[in-house]
Length: 502
Ligand SMILES: Cc1cc2nc3c(=O)[nH]c(=O)nc-3n(C[C@H](O)[C@H](O)[C@H](O)COP(=O)(O)OP(=O)(O)OC[C@H]3O[C@@H](n4cnc5c(N)ncnc54)[C@H](O)[C@@H]3O)c2cc1C
Image 1 (cartoon, rainbow, N blue to C red):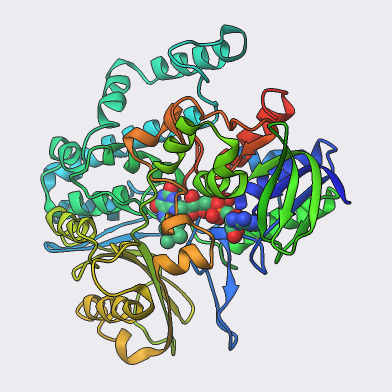
Image 2 (image 1 turned 180 degrees about the vertical axis):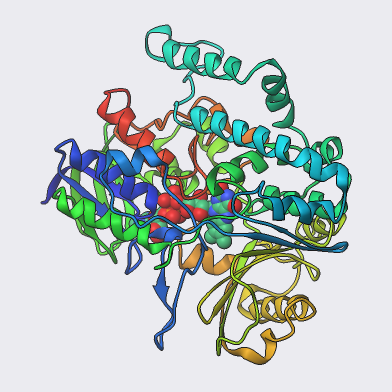
């Protein structure tokens, strides 16, 4: 039987980041991916007939320290303009956010908002930096107890970092975290257009509406991962990140096996000792990292029999509530959509109503959309499309997503419909079946107030450990996760290499 120092389940970008750190530390590492290609949600893939698409994520960037640590060769992504199509008109904010043209665009809606905008951008940048620092530190294991020897110094540094924001921003940051987008923007801006533009970023990827508590936090989170309003795009697709990570891993003598679904984590005397693949093959390792979501990892791969009943109950209740779908159009190139990110976000109320539909397990008929283009491809992020439908099923309802998207976009981009030559819809069911995301949840567990920081994925289990010794979580479902940042992959590896988990 083959044996490794470490097995990593899942070649999503986080799994690959973990594997790279381990391989560079001299460990013999094997990454096992169920799909035929690596990349998870950061994948750029072919839909056939020479049609290559960023199937899930239009853009993203790893944290700079990870790129540096791993010596990755990733071409710099291009910053994007952000255009919001609102009830009041079109608002266009350039990649640098505070250039004169962006401020003039805001001024067309409100002179007062244009004046406050640079202060807001500076505040959001400061919040994002703070969040980045928080995401780099595994949370204390047994709050309210803090292990002073292990956790004291990092916590003290975070407290100091918070203090350095200055008294005013420190309080504004703490206060904004649990706020709704509505409340937050009411305090800053008066125009419907600017509020809607910002709210669309706050709700993007989350099954929350702009009137949900915690969308102050999700705005900061997405701002951090995007570096502002629009995610930067890679000329060769998001897959550039995956390519750089796989090349670096192979160069460090790590191994990747695709088409290798892990069916079970092998556990002996409460310790993970390897995995069994769907093919029946068993592979042993000193430690098993999982980049799959925590619910799948704990309940399906480890198994409830290995967990205490109360822990199993908590794991079953990790909130997975996918409501995101993608619609890709292959066009003849004459779609008439300008480069950049386009948010179709009529108003805050409009987006809240779209969210309401998902609460009742219905597809939003007036959805919030985010549109991006790459060459002939027009990619539409569709929200809200709930995983569980009140009537019908996703086998038949996928076509409706395409129809609703086209109808919503027609008044804004009149040339689009006639330019369409083909399409591909990815429903929440596809996200589960094809991309391995439980309930189609793109974040491996909602980024909600009861599932963040020390409560992600579960209270007091945010330091990558699981109740099974030698089974370590390294995907987005742990503290620091969500977005294409690599933070959880990095943290998991550092925890292990520092002897704190595993
Ligand atoms: C349309 C869209 C929009 C998004 N927007 C946002 C946003 O605005 N903000 C935000 O924070 N995040 C957003 N996300 C989520 C973000 O992309 C994810 O958090 C991130 O990409 C997850 O990376 P990962 O490496 O942790 O996991 P993944 O990329 O999901 O990788 C996990 C890998 O594990 C594999 N796997 C699973 N089970 C097994 C098994 N049993 N055996 C072998 N392999 C297995 C999967 O096939 C997959 O390759 C969005 C995602 C999508 C799709």
